[in-house]
Image (cartoon, rainbow, N blue to C red; front, side, top):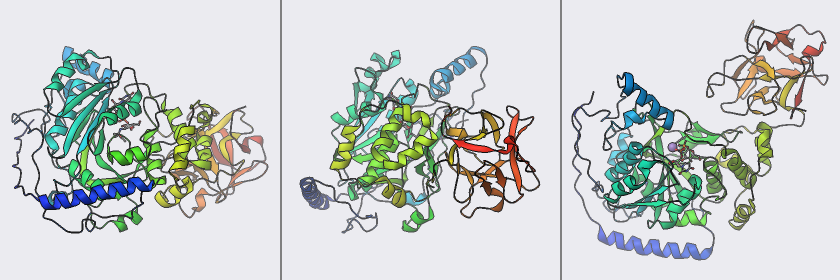
Length: 582
Ligand code: LR7
Ligand code: MN
């Protein structure tokens, strides 16, 4: 199992007091000027290389708050490798029970050191970077938690203390969002009171992650707020790049690269390649993307910051002052969900930038499935849509008609904030920040459920076995449910039938010699086999084969599928779009 744990000595340190003083004065002056002017100066893309004018020699790494205790050679998962315990009987039962309760293999987590060291998974260039430790702002790390398991929570805390330079860490604020598990009461308070710089505060009712984080932020003393989830492990050197960037550009909100820690084996799946950036689909679900070429061209080196349209939500650093200027969070959001897109839209539309720093890596345990109810996510997303998306919110409502009916409370304060900060509109955001996102046309009468006239109550339905792999599978017919999602299609002026609720977007296609409809990825120029003619009488003709789409009995799915047949004028060959079931 375990291998010897390598330990490195910190490199030599150097000081640069004068530079510190001069910069402090300048920074202070800048702060006063900006605060006075009332609006935030929108800076151009300041870059790591040339934004620090006089290059004072930067010092090497600094001592962390706590040093890592040495690990036994055979310690489980000590190097981030996958661990699979060979269990039987009672032990196996306990492991399964822990997975049921936390959706994470806590039985295993409890057996992995709280002080393990992650293997290095950053771009080797990151190691060469030097930082002006005396000049960088200090940060308060804010970690909200709700009913988290002991070992994942404590491992998060230790990893922050053991990877963050003492000089940069103001404090770690843990916010207990009204957990009811016994181990998080006295026992946790006692444990944390032994640790330097760690504070524990408790909500007096369940606040949800937005207000819990704000509770932490409200007592934070650091100049920068760094938010983390409560089941993270920080990689060596994770903090400096975030603070360095905010030091250069106060209106930059900076995310680390989020590496996966496997919920079952606790394997650390970090990699040193190009990180992914955040987007969303028209259900307002967060998505990951490759870095687009246009952004790559702006980068001066592989370890330059990468601008990202959205963030996953849990892990980011922001200047406290800028966070407050931007209106922190929408406190009308409950429990979980939506706040990440809302904040992302707000950052961009109101003049900030959202970036990922390739040199900052933090591992996050992605649970098997959600460990608690996330039913508030819908209302939270609606709040985000109502305040920030202008007319584009309709594209969301079309694809999720239930959202339109969801009570979402009062957003008038948030709209006032938007007006006060003179934020740009959503069209600007789409065109400038996220041009890769295809914007549907949604022409009246050409989107929604595609219902069969002959086979009454049946609609085109696409439910690929894997959410993230939308292409290649057959389109079937199921009873119309009127909830958008997997029964939502759009017929475009390019004559495609697009399945454009999620990403990547897929289009209905017919493969050579076949009579079934399948999904292929959409293309900029519509391939012949993806072209359909929808006549006014509802006849749907596949242009290349001149055949008609017919609701037909089959062996698959619920027994019906759209198949290509010779055109006969029957009602089973007629189709019409409907927005709602009536
Ligand atoms: O009611 C709650 N109160 C809380 O304090 C619910 C949650 N929380 C805490 C919770 O204990 C955790 O520390 O808030 C944090 C986030 O909750 P998770 O870990 O259950 O969320 P997640 O990791 O599944 O979800 C991602 O999206 C969320 C949207 O609301 C938040 O923004 C999470 O922070 C975010 N996590 C990440 O970005 C990590 C990477 C995941 C991805 C992609
Ligand atoms: Mn999480």
